Amino acid sequence: MAKQSETIGPEHGAFIEKQPVFFVGTAAADGRVNVSPKGMDSLRVLGPNQVAWLNVTGSGNETAAHLLKLPRMTLMFCAFEGAPLILRLYGLARMVQPTDSEWSELSSLFPPLPGSRQIYLLDVDLVQTSCGMAVPLMDFQEGRENLNEVHRKLSDGQLDDYRQRKNTQSIDGFPTGLPETMKPQPS
Image (cartoon, one colour):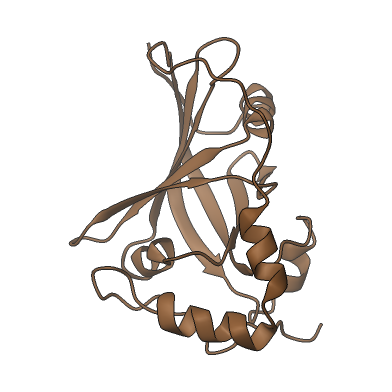
């Protein structure tokens, strides 16, 4: 049975920290709904009503485009080991990019990940847990390093070029707000 709360309680935070993967869902008023799996050491609970997650360069940039149109976001975590549980965080989110003044402080919360592109701040207004009894049990083996390895081989200019070709529009043609270069602002 689903339980709802207005805040991320200590038990929620502990569950979130143990999950090696989470899913982010966003959508504009029209166009496609996007659900993306996320991993790496890329999520932090900042308080009872806020989380931050570090996003790295990928083949698309749907989340950014959707948030510029409609800032709704849902994060979902599933227990693939141990007791069954699904936890969802609902709220409004905003994007912080390396060219923004907040980047330096927020990025210091995460290990340096090559290809870092955005940090999303989600202001949580609802936490919902449900049973998760239909989620399969699976053993976590290890995180993948493939994306980090690809990013380490590219210069800043090559990454900027890739982002301009692949990350400036959503699959529905919505702009993502990506700057031409991702050089951080001086502190």
